[in-house]
Image 1 (cartoon, rainbow, N blue to C red):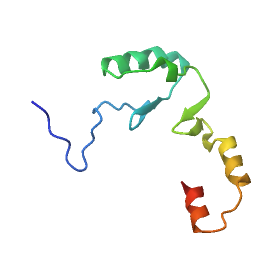
Image 2: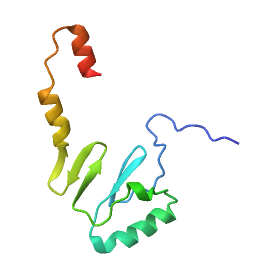
Image 3: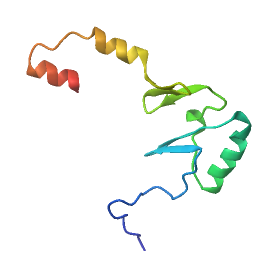
Image 4: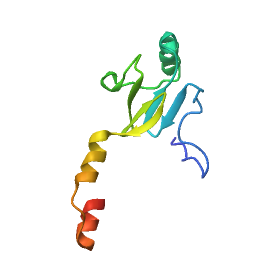
Length: 102
């Protein structure tokens, strides 16, 4: 039998969201000391979370998350994307503005 979808205000994510983890739809980031990484991996396994090795990075001081650079200093935009926006020609009409905004 199919379970019903969660009602408004309820999460579709598992209840398991420990303090060392931030969940963003289908991505998540795990923060902590390098010595704790094996413990965190075990906890992810116990919670039946699937990890894509190609998208995993361990013992790093910064990384990409949802198109942003995340580090202990905070969140920053990708410099190449900022440069592209700054160097883009200014739209000259509504159609050009619409194209620029996507």
